[in-house]
Length: 428
Image (cartoon, rainbow, N blue to C red):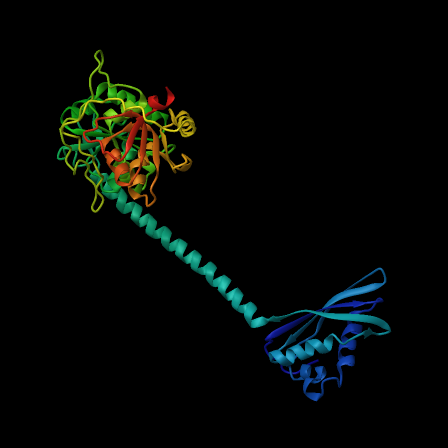
């Protein structure tokens, strides 16, 4: 039945429930019979189907417990209004044969919209597949190029044939890493004054190099990194310590992370004070001193525009002396004492408000950078580390009232507006 079919624009979905057992032809007959003459000749279902403006009506039925249930599907190429009228007419059917029936329109689906959704989904799949293949090819090409560059960039240095960058001899400052993979990663990001120890023990080449160069030891953020630093301090002359964050290795850091953690390096003396150690040679305790009274700003060769900051060594440092005991209300002192007890041995710091309530927690190595970039004004800074001139100056510029650390380092200038305390002042 029906004339030349027209492409359907909409599909009517209706649920039908009948109080009795009937067959599909009974339902189709009821649809045509009970709508005949209801809407006039222009919207008569038989005429619409002959002209192809209504498609083949599909009925899906099942019977259970003496009742019949099913779905009626009617394709339509009429406009939205006419399709809605046909749908409403279908809902007027109340009999199928001798049985009472109920029809309810479930939805009217825009076939073109469904097609558009499928087109969009398929186009997305095609594009993702296309971009993935393209990205893979580009990645392979980049890897080949970088591999070629690395092969030419990595050299060998000294009698131990240690992996190194091309500027180890030319630069006054050398970055010492744990192994070859660290050197490869740093060369990839433009650091050429780098050399790897390439083993668990410190080679003689590193020992000799440390006598004539400013050395930055850049190690992994794990237990192995700590052990290597300990050995380095025993047998070589180290000036600065930089570390990858906990659980990460130097070979895994991005270019931005490499720059960040090199900028956060600390003088060897401060590192040893933080660790509760002093640098020793094989038999004699020795004082840790920088090789130069002032380290040049270009101590670390960085690819432009990144340049790690190296703090200058004060030319006339004051000898270390304990901070005076300060008068703080007993209630506040108890809060401060509690914070100090929590921080001891943690290598962490906190920023508090005037009620000594913690507002921010930070690793000691990142404290100076955090304070410098902070827009808020902390009342107190309490940290498990050494109070240095740089940290004191930054805290003073940010309006900090109390600076509390584990120890006081070489302080050349003490601002009047900030009170300095050490842990021993609080826990006595």
